[in-house]
Length: 237
Image (cartoon, rainbow, N blue to C red; front, top):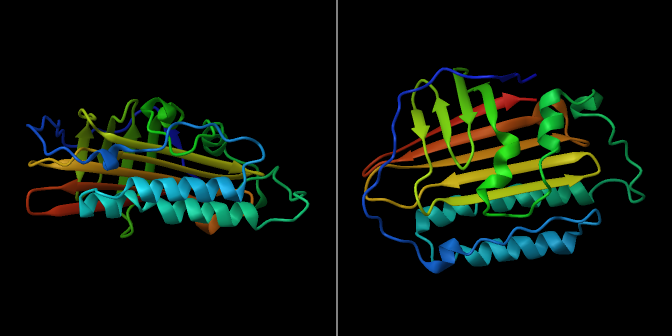
């Protein structure tokens, strides 16, 4: 069970102050407008959102496009789970992962606004806090999420203190259907001639999700001039 702490140890500070950047095409900025999902959120609506997302990626830098489209399988998984339950919608949604009562963290995440692919960074305010987990190799890692795209990430191989620069790409998405919850939060710096960063945060839990897959998956990537360093951090729910 993951615990939310008031604060976490700070990692090596790297404040980004990039110089003039190569601006991405207008297509790279064409994120969907904020849209609140209704209680009768349909598969047709999901398909439309996915098509819009794929369309908006055309014209991006190839590396950025691959990262941006990483959200497609996540949202598709949400569609499969949401549409794969009982036809009468009578499935039990009163419990969290593995049939147990939801934790305080799960309840807080589930209370995030139901928004579809919004680029408004304020939508992520519900995620603010500290998340402690482990890397795939079992080493301790932590993410302290702030507001407006700010975060601090600490791990043995990568530590980042980040403030979102101008023209940062934000994507927030929350699917909530019958007790099933899927949240995705992406913070991607504009491509720079110097070091830039990308954060992917995905939480998957609730009805229909077993204990083994009920997790928060965090990935922070540092893009240097000639090197790329990426660290995954998993928080069990």
